[in-house]
Image (cartoon, rainbow, N blue to C red; front, side, top):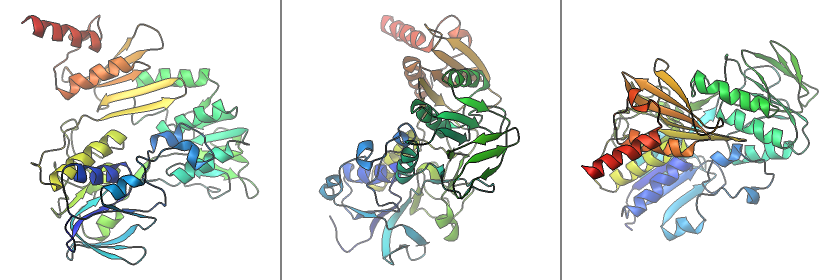
Length: 415
């Protein structure tokens, strides 16, 4: 390792930041690598946080790698010391503890923050958002006694937590402002089935319903909505996320609901600065325009691309197929590709009523697939979409993507 010279500074200790740092070393980069993380915990996985209700840190076991990983690879990991200012002209960052650290290349992996709940009473005890490990542990402890749980927001995290609370025996009501669940992520054709399965499990769902206020004497006791007053010993809200792009904005970098980067994930304002993960807005061949994606796949793949580029491998555009998943009780929801509201969606039932797939077509070709409890069809969709294999609605008449892929492979072998 070279000493005394600026290296790579990674701002953010989440999945994206970890991916950058680990890829740098795996790709042979031998300069200094320093990761600054705002939280005191080792970098960890976030998806399990909304799918379990543990009360103890050790029970979750979400650390991405053991602490020894960083020392063995000479990665400087600064926990609980976040970066508070950037100086692109001087190529330095300043941390909360007062350190000034030079860099040859800076990677912003600052993630996103929960949008605040803009109603009276949001600061009462018993009201939680879920973003961090500490948030998850606090919710887990609250679920040991809460009998009436209100979840504000019918997105992935809200529905996952609703089923966790229901499994713990609580009465659960989900309150969603729009007229359906998962309105930004899921087609209406699949949403109806998701809702029916949650209601079958005993979750009460109120869509098209606004939250007016949270009330209680120091601690939340009820939620006042546009339709009813709901008893609540615990309130969890998830009403969207905003990118943490204020460091970039304050430093004069271009931002627009995320740090604006090019196809190689470099800041459009400064080629020595990259942005990855939830905080980056980038061009993508599967999107109509610049897009900001919030998923583990995206964070990991972007970190790998940037780590390899900085390590000296030939630069490449970011083109990874977006895919997502959500486990909600007995529902396994998986999505491959990016569906637009105007796409033509065709619904298909698998070999059991519990298995569904929604195929989205644009200009006659398959662009995205949503599946419920059908992992094999999801994997087939990913393979075909990643290879950009043309699939039309006629191709899927009376068959599935999995069967279609097998038939095409057999034809290639015969040829």
